[in-house]
Image: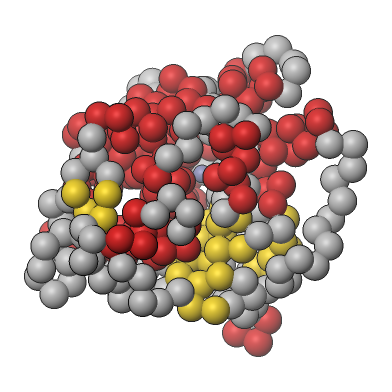
Amino acid sequence: MTFRGDANFDTTSVSRGGGGGRGGGAIAIGGGGILTVILVLVSMFFGVDLTGLAPGQPIDPQSQTQSGEEITGCTGEQANDPANIDCRMEGGADSMSQFWETTFAANNLEYRDPTVQLFDRQVETGCGGATSAVGPFYCPPDERIYLDTTFFQQMRDQFGASGGNLAQLYVLGHEWGHHIQNVTGDLQRVQQGDTGPQSTAVRSELQADCYAGAWIAAASQTADDDGGAPLLIAPTQTEMNDALNAAQTIGDDRLQQMGGGGVNPEGWTHGSSEQRANWLATGYNDGVGACNTWSAPQV
Ligand SMILES: [Zn+2]
């Protein structure tokens, strides 16, 4: 999936840095290897319940962390550059904003954007401090997506994912999906400690995957804010395979195997490789209306 070369992005707030700042000694994990994998395993795409704070709970503006430096002035050409993650996230966020705004408006619902904060190593958030080990996540109290971009490298190096441009945008689309759940109230259906292949935790994660797929399919059809051409060109099959590969790579069964233990479905919080790829494909093929993972007898 590629951005139109002359596309301009200007609607959303994507920033880098802020909070704990860059390079300030991340919490030592120590030992590496298995411990790191286990930490990643429990927290990967953790997304919704870092602290157990209720969605929408207001936070003291005084305590709100700085959002860092705003990313502006990116072109589509820059967003397509494999080395330019910041511009790609800015472009993806703009497209997602337009897609969800349009989708909500079509249903007479009021929409509001999340903000996106890119960081590396560590960051202070409305949900507390976080390090790279947590993986990308969404923090409901400050309605902000936190994305450590070294995660994309980790997806390739540690998990063996293809990790191309669309795989990266899928990750952003998944976290954006959690924001949609926060706005619609679906996020509150997740019961703390409820795990397993058919659990509320997994249903929430699969819906976020489905929403990401719906955005991928619609992105090349959604006019930009000024009514101009869509920001993106429809994905090729190769690009779509790259996104599906990412979803499979971060399936709970795959991560459990990588952690050296056996596969234990009762411990799943995000869904198996198969579940995740299936729901991403469902959103892609059938759109937002097909993403009701809550009423599906089996997900
Ligand atoms: Zn998630």
